[in-house]
Length: 264
Ligand code: GLP
Image 1: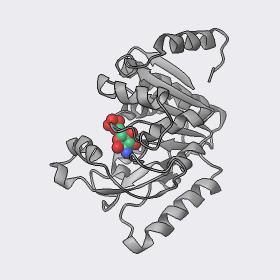
Image 2: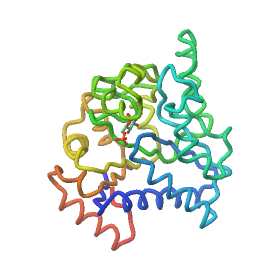
Image 3: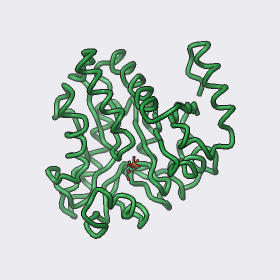
Image 4: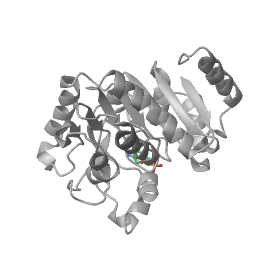
């Protein structure tokens, strides 16, 4: 794994955006895997800036989001579809029909089919070239809560108490937070060709250390990233605070920069 420890949130966002830009420039019809939450908002802001000021073209890009609250319609202001439109899609020249978010309004009887079709669509588009990930307070990626299978696929999941409490800041009260979601599985995520894993802030420091340096376990689903050959973790100083090997990662990143290679 390549671990980049950068000064602050803005630098993290810019580094992530540079990786996205490189891919979109080299492969204009690439497939991006996208995440929600506050972490990638700076990356999305930077992607919008690069589109507006540098003419970065998203017209042939396809995107797949990781997850969606179950029970919220795409028009609901707290739905992840709404979030993506507001924070990214409306600001770039992507075709809305090429942006996919699991449909949280699907009827109970249709959930399995809908999840299976989501996976099939990812395959049909050639798989995800670059997946953006954040990490939940309980170590989840997407909504793969503690106890998820590391081979899991897109499915209906229940949300952990901690997630409901963490995400209640976006709702009027924690009672309003949906208790279920549709989420890509850990197995689905690990099929992406490359992954960027973003974290910032002191609140994430311990769980980031558990994910990157602890045992690979379904109790911290982000730890499954240790099994993927091309992950770049981009952290701000605060989020890197509990890492045991922080100074080695800085050394390796500097060495990589000197020879102009990504050292995973
Ligand atoms: C949600 C999403 C995750 C995201 C997490 C962290 O639970 N399902 O994909 O990584 O929030 O959110 P934040 O970036 O706001 O800390």
